[in-house]
Amino acid sequence: MGGHLEIERKFAVGASFVLPRLDDVGRAAGVAATTEPETFTQEAVYYDSEDLRLASAKITLRRRVGGTDDGWHLKLPAGVGAREEIHRPLSAAEPDERGIAHGAPPADLLDIVFLHLRGARVSPVARLVTTRGATRLLDLAGEPLAEVVDDRVRAQTLGERAVLRQWREIEVELLTQPDAPATNGASAGGNGTRLLDEVEAALRAAGATDAPHGSKLAQVLSLANTAPPEPAPRPAPELLARRRRRGGVAAGEVLRVYLSAQVEALLAADPRVRMDEPDAVHKMRVATRRMRSTLRTFASLFPADLVAHLDLELGDLARSLSGARDSEVQLAYFDGRLAALPSDLVLGPIEESLAGHLKAGMAEGRAEALAALRAERYLVLLVDLADLVRAPLTGRARRPAATELRELVRVADRKLAAKVAKAAATAAGPDRDVLLHSARKQAKRLRYAGEALVPIFGADAKALARLSEEAQELLGTHQDATVAAGLLRSWGVAAQEAGDSTAFTYGLLLGLEELRARVAEREFFDAWPALSDSRDRRWMKKK
Image (cartoon, rainbow, N blue to C red; front, side, top):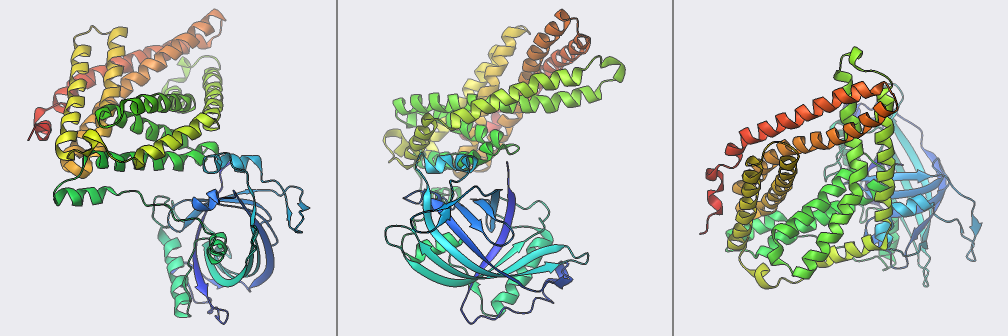
């Protein structure tokens, strides 16, 4: 369901602007020739809620005809200078009372932007007619590297007060994806960046300037004075570090920065979970767990009823995301396990049997995850999280971070040590497995606490996060093996009762997982003295 990454740069030009010759542009980036300009007219109708919720999130949804890509287009932000564009074919359209032909947006595109619309209906908000002149830059083999388009735009808003505007702009878009383009704030790398830079330099030399907006819809809404307000920037960790050096910062402010980043990560992952993109469920689940863990570790800084409510909601959301992710990870792991076994120990259609069990789990898990993301309860949670990171600081949250957070993270560290000691004093077996799983979860909480405190305690907090992550990873291997052993035991017993020849290999895999659990357990206890060294925790002492 995913789309393609659109990497482009936009420039404003006047009516008299003359597009420079592009023949010699981009030679160093592999351009060998250019095509003759192709001119055509496109008409696009843009859809949004009445209060422009999509535009507020820098998202565009349009129905376009003319040119080479007729269809529905949904564009999602994907970093500086990049957007992910998803296409769907056109459906039947009838003109409305204004003579504008449009149809209902595809349901799956509306689902992708569910959290932004929050139940609001969409309707046409603007109509743009663009006369486009397109020139392509080709490599030695005649393959297109980039396209430079000269757009003359006539735009009309479709609200109660229709406003007509027109302007001209130049767009430069990469047509060949660069090596692993970044989506975390960086633009495309390698020759892609070089080519864009060279074309940009030529355009600026001819008089082009920065486009005032990132999309044509944003441009017409701005010109019509109907653009939604820019979202307030979230606080940055580096600002906290500077304020601490100048004399202090409140404990609640530190946690607000960390929680804001996790809310942002959850919102960014949401549409990608709906599109079934790789690793999207994992990213959303991690953001959810980080928030829940932070609220638990620093619960005394928040209202008790709020912590209890969000703990329940975030916990249920994380569990709804777990089925699909766990089955996905297990499928990849068992594929590797089977590939490493000698062929004479792989009996019966074990690959198909394992895949059948796990893919069924993936399908059920995905259905559960999507049901959770489409529920009103999820939208309420998002509102509650937004209120959490904007709420005024009260009580202990207003106390100095350097003392208040130091004490709470020391308590979390002691809890981990106590859990490990209890596990060490318990004989190996199911009871110890349960205790080690509890220690793993506490190690994860301590890791996230260390991450949150980096703006205040710097290298000390980073070291705590790193040591806790090492403990979490060792205990995670133990937990993964314990869970896998339980699955293999049930599947193997079922295969044996059915007289299936796969029972032998299931039993072999079970033995290997039990061994992996015991080895991971031993490695953790061997590493624990170094991971819990008091010298790495001297900064936690009261000052």
